Length: 113
Length: 112
Image (cartoon, rainbow over all chains, first blue to last red):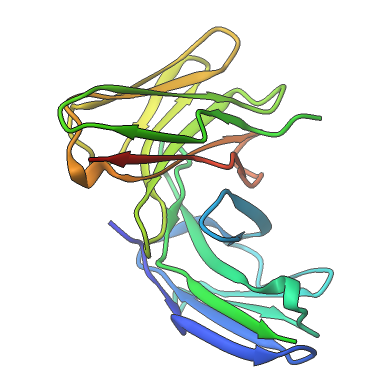
């Protein structure tokens, strides 16, 4: 079953604008990760944020985590046409014997040139 | 360095047949996981193996099985294929809990 939901399901913006995607989840987590997927192929790991972290940056990406609200957001600044893809958040539950990823349904981002 | 490699890239099978998908993790990664992704959905966890032992199994029927070999490569087997098994099957490897996963490009399975 899906862990949570990304919001919005689809987002269309112009090049140079910022894109914000949100993710909600249901259980206590060890960490939360964001992935990008182009055209239904393999996923690319973007960033991992641990449950004791509140914000993390990587290049044009900024991720926040609010464990009290069980939510996270991914901000892509100064977007480019090449950022067009589906973006998924995935959580690793705390206390488990494995570290499987539980994904949301994703946000389809379209960046128009 | 080679990433996670999966074979084949595409596969067409008939209902009732059996299929084997293969995955080679990144060198040094001892954990391999399998995911199923149907169109329009996020990937769903099928199996995780670590050091050749099953560490987790998702909510999939017993028709799905997997194993990990001494070189850490892995196979996913699906028996008695159903139309609903049509999906992109993704393999991922990881260096550990504090690291993200590296995914292969997937095997697109079509059951007709």
